[in-house]
Amino acid sequence: MNRRLYVNQERIGAVFSLLLAVFLWQIYNLTSGNPIGILFGAVNQSIWEQLKCVILGYVIFGLTELVTSKPYFRQFTVSKAVGLYSAIILYIILRYFLWGIYNTYVNLAITAAALIGGYVVSVIVMGFGERVRDLFTVSCFMLILVFVMYFSFTIFPPHLALFQDPDTSLYGIIPDYIDTGAMVMDILAG
Image (cartoon, rainbow, N blue to C red; front, side, top):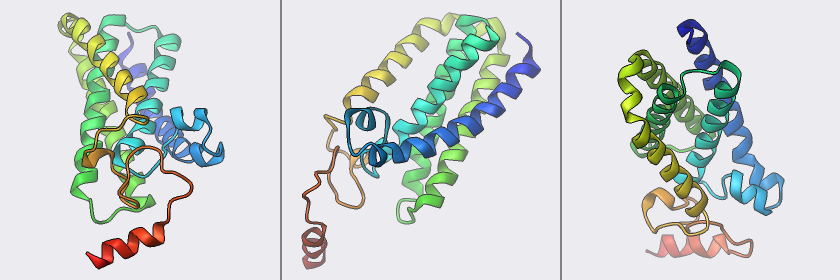
């Protein structure tokens, strides 16, 4: 595979994935909470729900690369799996590091940094050549694990800080009938 072509595709991928993530953050509200919005969008402001949109953008562009440029399959799978996990870990670390100052612009910057980091790692791993092909089975398991988490944790979120909505302190899909004013009073009352 042509290395220059791959590097250019990864640059385009970082921009495409960022734009798709921004769109997917809004799709739950745009679809009025229907199953498409639940499956592909962010149902709350938790780290996991925001990260779901990043994961989907990365995977969609990876599949597009696979179809259009026809890289070495095993090497490509390993590089994409390692890049995806790097983006996930970087996003989580940055969100925890900037826990108190969360807003749309900070989330956009964190997402851009995580995606750029993931795509850079993907290029680096792809540069190792045939030496990474032995990690193909492990990479396939890693990708399957991401998809199991992706499809499970919105409906059945573990009660961990990663899945907790910072606005309501709830997990998963936030009901429409919630009284946020009572929640604020409860927090203020201690």
